[in-house]
Length: 433
Image (cartoon, rainbow, N blue to C red; front, top):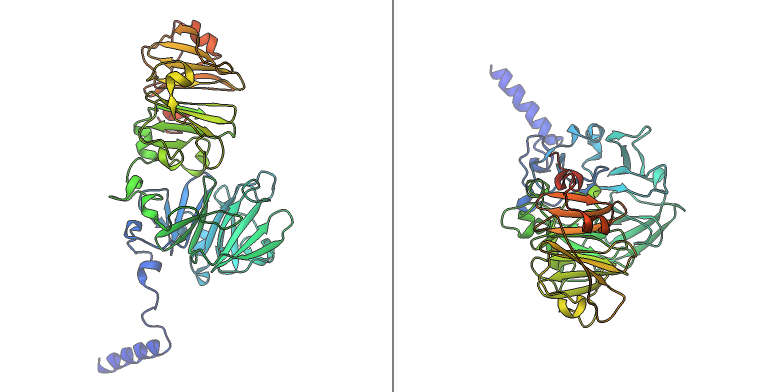
């Protein structure tokens, strides 16, 4: 027994002398049995949406799927990443969403050390992993990355970050331009989401312009207030996709000339055209700074967004930033010739008639004449509506958690019977019920 004890001690001593004792890396970041809580302020290794629009947050060998919930082991979804333990954790990730790139469109890329993994429809693409230099020539290893589509960047590009250097990789020419943005913190992860660009450092983030690197606004901000559901951390502790499926009523809804669709409820709004990037509500004042609280109606006309709140109308230029037009807000009576409050408003395509709904009546207002007055009035088969919008598939009237479809405003005006109701939850939010 004494000999056995001495032998065990000798083996332990040899193991420690060879560096095989207790690992230097904290077990919380690597071990499968780690108990991680991102609301404690974790520094993520990588963040990216997958091809279904679910946001992925990576830390060590764990991944969170979505803005709330518990982490799971990476190997439960991306087995091949776990097969290469010698590569360490995920350094960077992004989803390439360039329809013109028929090879890589809708692929999600993960970067580990000097290797890159390409997943499509949740499966590792044949031939991967590959060297980063083979797939993205001129780009170094140990990275953070975010895509940058044409229109936001000069050409379809990927932004690779390494310390304070930024590598603009042109996906068409496969050329790289390097810049130094020393004013940004060293990004531990980066993300393009809803046409905005974020550099994460620790549990804080900074929003920047993808071409110039310019930072506008007060940053850094705490990621727990915006990118995850954490108790007592701003609007991040409010509605989530699960909450949205429980209460699907909307106060107003519209689609602008750029194809961006917005649904409003209470003091929050949500982009409907970006379901691939996951549902997430934001305060209305984040985009339309002069509007606080809930709104009554919204419609778009000639590149402008009209927001009606009480007896006031706010008109914004469509596009990034949504600038309030000088001289607004104005009274609803002065702008549209109708007394507020109203329940809904919409314009169909390039037509010049605003259809304003108040109680059980719809009023037609010609937007090409001044002063604007009510041109026509029609009764509706609803005592009260929540919202209305018009698109290529006709008019939709929203009442509580249902909506009703009509071919044209004229059909709506002459209808006395409600058509079959459709569920907002299923057809707009993708809920299961």
